[in-house]
Length: 377
Image (cartoon, rainbow, N blue to C red; front, side, top):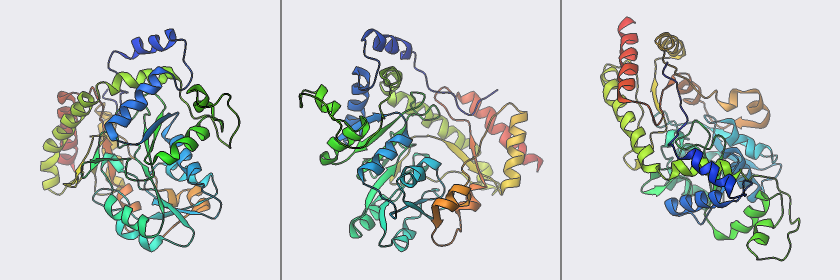
């Protein structure tokens, strides 16, 4: 059986977890947490990185830092995971969904400005599949309308837009280290902070509303409850697991890129024959091979292909159900403009297996079976 995903593992994870235990510091903000934060800061150039328990929590922290309030509106794509909306909805905001581009599956930057109202507080672009949104346009709109930007870069580590790492354009960027991501700590994430002025408040919100982080650095003589907050700190054992992969980040990324390219080359004849569509990577974007997807003719064909591949011991999946059509999306949000592509494209997309240890032989087998399916129809 070729699984859809196998969590990355380098071989050093157990040794580092043991080291974390022997450090007698397994709660949050231990030595491995600091190493991960520093690695991300050095890699991205962000002013500060704070490891979190999930990308969901990183996005919630961003909403807290922006002081999102009931009545505020946040513009985002409907084609995204629920956490993008939840972080703002939890603060009482309305999610305002706009249509996506059918080429990148990212939010259509040309539709954002017309969705802006006097209640709009922020824009939340989602870098789908590690392919950057049109950040120049988005940042220009944000500047002219005095809006904040929170990048959902859950899938975007080691990817960039015009040479600048994803997650570093807006006030805040959010990474995911869920087991399905390129680098994993099981459950986990990171908040990237662009401006130094936001660091102190971020630390307070992340540490249950206290200035405990400053206390441990010797900056205050006791820590006190300063604001509302919650516990967003992952265990240092989780960070130890992640750090083993960050050390090999380039190797892991290159392995994924190699498999991605093999998929592309072997499935190009089907695309040229008009039977499927392949991913589109703009020339100004460097992606990270987070996923490889194809687009079928419609939902019915996709379902048949998924079933066919399963018979051949290949697990493939689809996502997302557009948020604006879900019960909570109807309750907490609204779709601005026409849904030309969000629903239509979401019903066509099919993700093929992609993980660090996927082999060239497995990719060849998978693509052979995809070709065999289309030979039958």
